[in-house]
Amino acid sequence: MKIYVPRDAAARGLGADAVARAVQAEAQARGLDVTLVRNGSRGMIWLEPLVEVETDAGRLAYGPATAADVPAILDGTSDKALGRVEDIPFFARQTRLTFARVGLIDPLDLDDYAAHGGLAGLKRALGMEPAAIVAEVTDSGLRGRGGAGFPTGIKWETVRKAAGPQKYIVCNADEGDSGTFADRMLMEGDPFTLIEGMAIAGIGTGATKGYVYIRSEYPDAIEVMTRAVEIARAKGVLGAAVLGTGPAFDMEIRVGAGAYVCGEETSLLNSLEGKRGVVRAKPPLPALEGFLGRPTVVNNVISLATVPVIFERGAQFYKDFGLGRSRGTIPVQIAGNVKFGGLFEAAFGMSLGALVDDIAGGTASGRPVKAVQVGGPLGAYFPRAKFDTPFGYEEFDGQGGLIGHAGVVVFDDSVDMLGMARFALEFCAIESCGKCTPCRIGAVRGVETVDRIALGDPAAIPLLTDLCETMKDGSLCALGGFTPYPVMSALTHFPDDFARAKEAAE
Image 1 (spheres, rainbow, N blue to C red):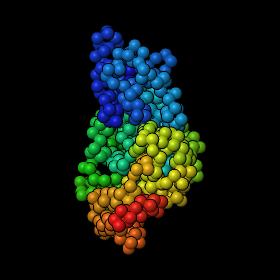
Image 2: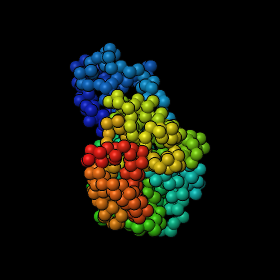
Image 3: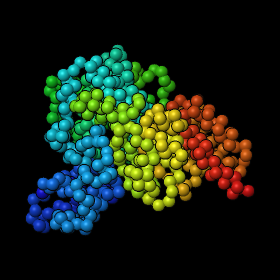
Image 4: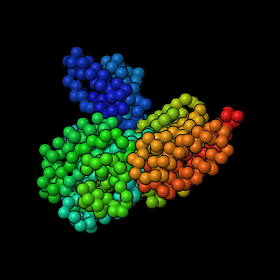
């Protein structure tokens, strides 16, 4: 009998380790030959810990499970039975490409990874010229999943053509946005796909060294990725000759120190070099002068982890999903006040309303949805009037928003939007690296201005608008430049909350 209990951080936080111990103890007491696999999470967080039992009919799910449920699960009589995992509606409606193996395999079993399609993309890439590798990524339409949406192939081509004695691949795993957890889930549940994607990037651009920069708040991901790199190196996936036949490519895991601004690529590079994490002026671009002044590809976890499926299935296969210039799939992370929170991978094009009302099931409180913030703490707040907006980079931009890292945080009608605007500015003031004046000073003045609005100062609202325009146009990076998105969207779409503050003051 094979039983799967996730070792994903979210599942562990909800009691998965206790369930795993109970499985082992109960199996020993009954004299059962049970193989316990600590897999990744399937992404249905409200069902965690989700126990899966392998049967002739498929993997049957039970959840949310506790240690006390284990005897009944082993007997097949548990009232936590959910049927086959693939038939659970939240899971069945997804298009899993990047996350196809997450929750399905043992994250640290390279043979299991290969048995489910792993390394096929790398093997194909090894038979291609670097220019053809980059062209494949370009043709797929893959864009940066970290938030900027910049075409991945263009970035790779710039590095490929750049002159330099050494080139690097840097994976940005400093996932600091509120309501986001896709990077963590991927690294904990399928680390070899990230390693494979980075190796393909190295072969395509001529880089021989890679780094994964992981935020310190992710100890489980750090542990899994460190072990996965060691295994990949020992099995010849990494090293002097990739898979024993290719060029050299090796990589290391580096841990950040908790600064939100290090999610910005140039600040990350400074931190990676052992310097203070402050934003660099551009140009020069990291693709030309990045890590240690050498040509460097800086991509997000999901961007790099998607590369293997593109090479396994072909650029056209991937490009056939999506809409407009937003091709492929996007792992949407649903959080906040929702009934069904978790990761939902789907092709670009699904409307925001469908995600919130149908997939997420509305609010957990049962109250009406008032606002949805998409794109982390710097994302705009969308009212219900904009719920028909399809998930796409240009489509969200046209509505004054941004997809960012695709975190979706839902709020019911009890939320105070003036308070949320203040939080955005306060967050920016705390997390600013201090390099540029619009961000460093503007965010502090912004908090003061919102407080004036709350006290009923009629001159404060146009002042806040002017301040946001200055921050948006003058900030050196997206931290100061995007903070106006939540502030102005709150002011524009929820003016009553700002008027009520004035009325309360009177």
